[in-house]
Length: 125
Image 1 (cartoon, helix red, strand yellow):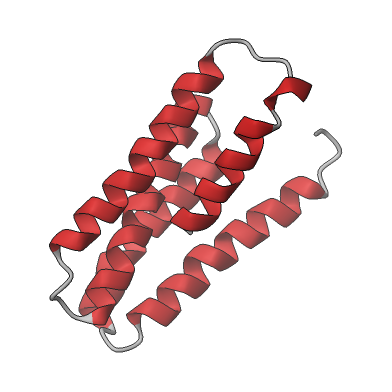
Image 2 (tube, rainbow, N blue to C red; image 1 turned 120 degrees about the vertical axis):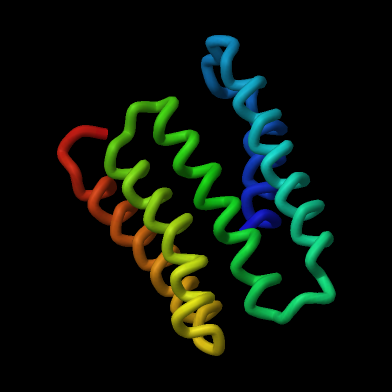
């Protein structure tokens, strides 16, 4: 996920002449870069750990990033999804350690997909 976000940010950065900017976008883009590199750095701290921990930690941190963005943007649906992602990671790790990466991916990815489809079908865009 961090690599995909980095690629998207670079493409948007290079194609920025086509969009209207208000000034806050550069700070927001820098904040996501901090999130990407910070997630990678924190994950490297636990690399000798089990695969489940190494897989869940970046996802939980990105869920926290989604939650923070949703709070700033006053987006309650996205905030609920971010909070769910953050809370599901430790619960799955404690309850179903062997299945936690798969179930976490399905929960977070499924939630993002459902929210994206719902918003794509909404009358206001």
